[in-house]
Length: 421
Ligand code: AMP
Ligand code: GLY
Image (tube, rainbow, N blue to C red; front, side, top):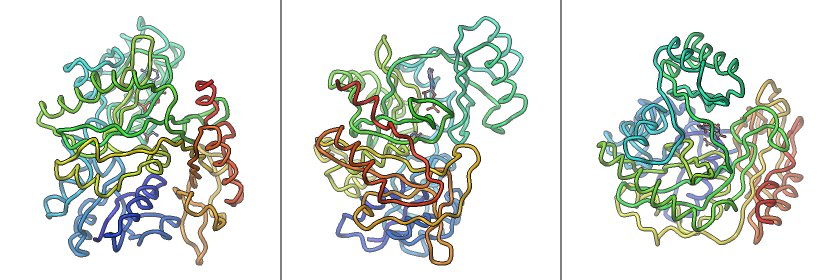
């Protein structure tokens, strides 16, 4: 089978490594992939947002199955375009990817179907938003409606910050058209949990839970990033909470999308906050999380391609998706300075004994050498019997990966360990 994976980060590398375990897979193309993924797949110089080119490539190369991993192409209709050409595909169509593509859509969906989430108001007019903020409870949360490279959420701790956020999103248009509408919502507190799920629109099968670490610095300080590390499972996510989420959030969301005529097939990601008043949805993503995937898929015991195909065919069954009872930890090695300014172009060396544990996110090949080419460079994952040993091993494995100016957090999993004790 010839497989095509759209995307080029650590998440895609994790998907590709897992797909390779299937004996029927003869070739994997990554569009565009990256310098590290090139060791596991044939990288093709087509960007993830070049929908027409992606579809043409799939036809010309007789791709048997495609996986669209990032949000942008999904929201832009990559799956629709591939399906039109007869290529079976993992991922939601554009009319379902809107669950991530528009915060206004997702908030209104949750309100309409009684799915627990933060209270909110929608504004399309900056003046009205500013007027509302004069008396709104503080802290408050301001979200640009559309995709904003994961940066469209501002937690305003003061009224001033809230005014500034509205001005920069709606008047200065820092996120372009994504800021034409905004959501202003209630500030919630509690541990956060990421739950990715497979769904074919009839059945929803949650994967093992995980915990992201979004801040750049130790002890959750510093700027927000794309994610500096993950652990799975997430110790806050007990069986009891999982049951409640299934009943009040997962199944109702799948049903709601069906009722709206927007059947969701693919990976539906639930970003949850476990508040005093029960679990609430912070966000939906229409795709695998990054770097959640780098801890979730190494724990998947079932064949990923088979599960994905069952999603596409509408034959997904919970008993066909099995996870190990072990723990996983992924530590992101970034370029020093990320998420602000950083240098690139440093050679990356990965010692043989850890090459299976490394998922490359930002690298390219220059003069035959793999060099750093992004803020988040790679993730190092370890799987072990306990969370404690998984964390220890992940950090030990990081010592076998070398590039100049590397930066990592030193406390990935520490909060989870504390919660266990
Ligand atoms: P998002 O891009 O929607 O994942 O939001 C980024 C981060 O902002 C989340 O992971 C939360 O930590 C935080 N966040 C989003 N919405 C809220 C909220 N209503 N209350 C508190 N924190 C929030
Ligand atoms: N790790 C968060 C995300 O993928 O959006």
